[in-house]
Length: 145
Image (cartoon, rainbow, N blue to C red; front, side):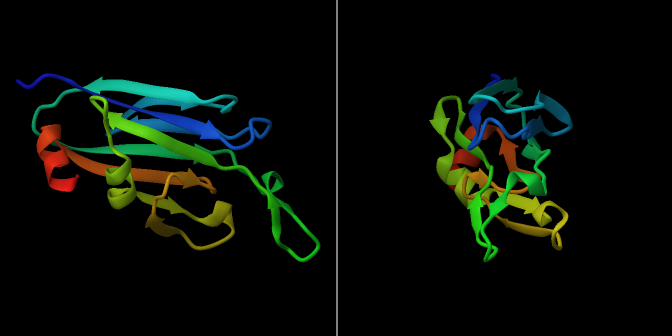
């Protein structure tokens, strides 16, 4: 049996006055449920490094149309987003892996068709960032770093 691994990272809102929430999931376990991101929040959890397939998910929730302000021409003046930063496994940065391998699925807060895009660190709509990975983690990291 391999040792456990630790996955950690930060969730931050670009506007703490907006009641934007987040959930962090690994497989079918909710690691953290933040009803209102009012400050930077660190998530951290241990999991088995035994052979298996896994999924890390970050969910943005509660964003509404009132959280985005427009000018008279329909251009966005301000909005709120969630940032997912500094994701690490056993203190090894996963910035490259997050950019290259994670997806962001959303429907423009109900304003459009559901899309799945690459994820670049910022969630602007209610939706889910998903990163599928395998353990043992070091074999996965060797393949994708």
